Amino acid sequence: MDTHSLNRTRAGDHVLLLSPDDKRYLVRLTPGARLDTHRGYITHDALIDQLFGSAIKTQLGHAFLIVHPSTSDWVMHIKRASQIIYPKEIGYIVLQLNIVPGARVIEAGTGSGGLTLALARLVRPNGKIYTYEERDDMLARAQKNFARAGVLDVIEMKQRDIRAGFDEKNVDALFLDVREPWLFLAQAHAALKGGGFFGALVPTTNQISALLDEMNLRADWTDIQVVEILLRGYKPVAERLRPVDRMVAHTGYLIFARAIRTNPETTFQNQIKLSASEEA
Image 1 (cartoon, rainbow, N blue to C red):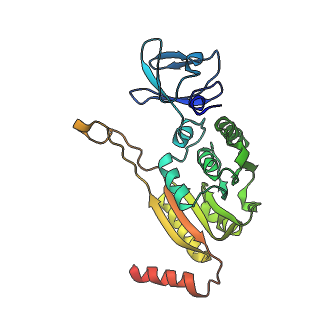
Image 2: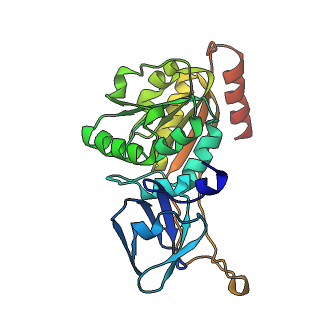
């Protein structure tokens, strides 16, 4: 197949349709099907064999742009039954956890699978995501989301209470999206390689304090960071540039750390604590 044809839509492709007023529709092109929008309908047959980046009109004459969906689009369009981790956090998470092709990553708290999906797209072609979830209904929904996004090949799903620990050892990174992450620090540390990347998301400051207290007691974590990410969009009108009327502000707090292999009676971590107390 030549390069030109690869940039055309085909039956079975997932495409994103953008309207001038920023409505977004992520659809899998199926011959004979129809997409109903807020500006009329478009048949899938009309969408097939179109150039990506071109426009198509509904029967009412309203134009939509045909583009490839981004990872952010996939995350925001998954079928969900729980709160998701938003792209604004996911972008920072994947940088802090050093998610690269070939990485082996554990995630606990699959939920609807938004973060898992993003991680999976980054670790290809030979990486692996091991995602743990207790609820079978959540895993079933997440599996459908992964299949739709085409990432099941790099995801291993496990239904388990993580108090029993993780099967994998010497993984590159581990992320906890669970209610009481401080209860699972020992299990997380045992699964990570020395210097491995740890992250967690919690919704309240009380949970941050509980996690930090446990980290300090264990003395086998370092490079600890706590952040909150607020993202404010602006209306892209040059003559009247101003913030959008609504913003996604607080959606959670992120905690990051590195696993260390050292005697808590010696050197490095004690020096970190001493330095922190002197600065306070």
